[in-house]
Length: 118
Image 1 (cartoon, rainbow, N blue to C red):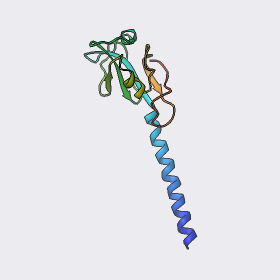
Image 2 (image 1 turned 30 degrees about the horizontal axis):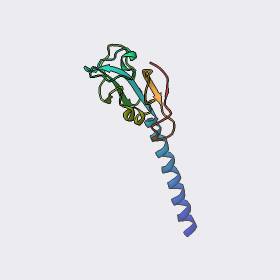
Image 3 (image 1 turned 45 degrees about the vertical axis):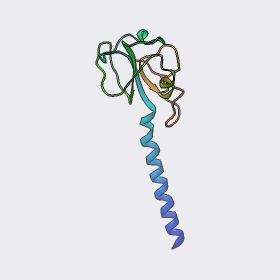
Image 4 (image 1 turned 90 degrees about the vertical axis):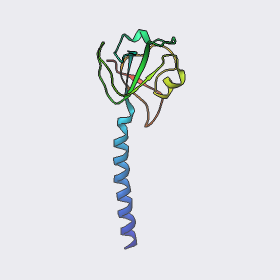
């Protein structure tokens, strides 16, 4: 009887663990775009490293596809020169961004982003 309870508990843990890891994979897909202060998508060159009060890197969790001139919603805006914030969302600390969907390595990892463009 005791062995059956342990086996049942182990099986339940295994199923719950598998479900948990599957639901977390969505956290690994993010989207980034260069936006103006009105949240409109602009050419990514405007978000190169320099400080700016007019242009920001927009970061959103999940897969979003926006074209030039589209208005983004939700997410967060990061100053292009904020190295720490860029690293936290999986972007290189400096340099240009490639707009579109990025995939981060590892669950909850903030590094190793790969862009698929957009």
